[in-house]
Image (cartoon, rainbow, N blue to C red; front, side):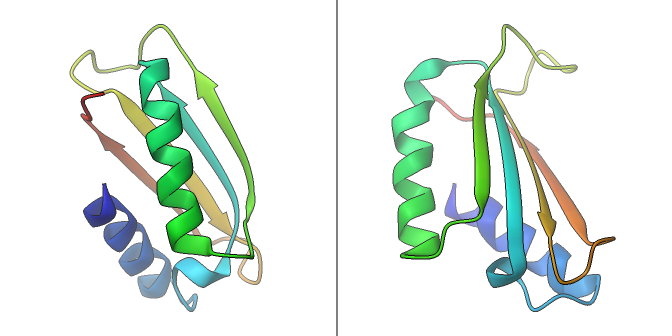
Length: 91
C-alpha cells in the first residue's frame, strides 16, 4: 500500500506539484469493506495532522474485476494536478 502512495507522490510531482503534501482531496473506492480500517491507518501515517478532504466509498465492483481499490486524488495548489491508482489489495 505504501508503494501506491509513493507512486501517487511521483505522479503529482511529475505534473508540477510538490508531491503528496499538495493533496487536497482524495476519494477511495473499495470492493471489500474490511480494507477501510487499513486504509484509514495508512492515511493517518502519511498525512499526520493535516488530512486532505477525503471519502472512502464501498462499491460492489470496479471496472476491472481484478481490482479492489481505486484511489483518485487532486492537488489544490495546482487544480489540473491529479493522480489515479488502481490496485488489488487483500483484507
